[in-house]
Length: 298
Ligand code: KIV
Image (cartoon, rainbow, N blue to C red):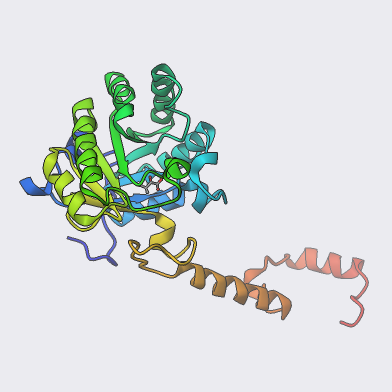
């Protein structure tokens, strides 16, 4: 096993498959699934080189890249563009494309057509935010041979309906409803389920109740895998980070210091140095020197 800092051998593009992920249930000896969002080619390359199993082209591209306050502004065009950029990294990781708000709410035909657009952009599977009402749409997409990952609990596209980003399933009735919804998603054909923003014991019960893997974000340690947002993990996102985020680096600070050093070098005339400049050949130098008047003050 390569250490985090060792160079890993490049994986064959698309080598991690949906059936392989579906089989990664910890209760049956499966290794925990590491999923990370990525929105562009460099991000996907970094995630893949680090050994991530699933690259999620999340609609959180809204907040992390496009500067929107929530995910409701993201369109199919945005998701197709970012999915294609991620696919150009040719990762070994499974690419899952997130279906944006309103891309699967109007009709099942439109939902299948939109899911197919993400597949044609390079995704091997799609994710959509669930609830029992989404079962027919999930079934239709799965019938079109497109694997679907469900997403339950705190579903950010429902921010207005939920009255904010709030931890879900906090009482017994809501916990039972979540477990029932997870089973319905499994029966509808989902190959995995994201559980977001739910108490850890509820996530544990959901994980026990279904044979497909659960992938948690703010859902505690008992899920079959975990997912974080690229920008949160690397310290590039909004501050303060939510309680469930572990920030592994402070790249915003590193990047700001680097850019400030560049600005300082430009202003002080230290950049570019002689070795960072192209030089004219002798003949051209003589011609130019004869042609131009001396620079005043030089
Ligand atoms: O878009 C996203 O980042 C997500 C994760 C939070 C699961 O859906």
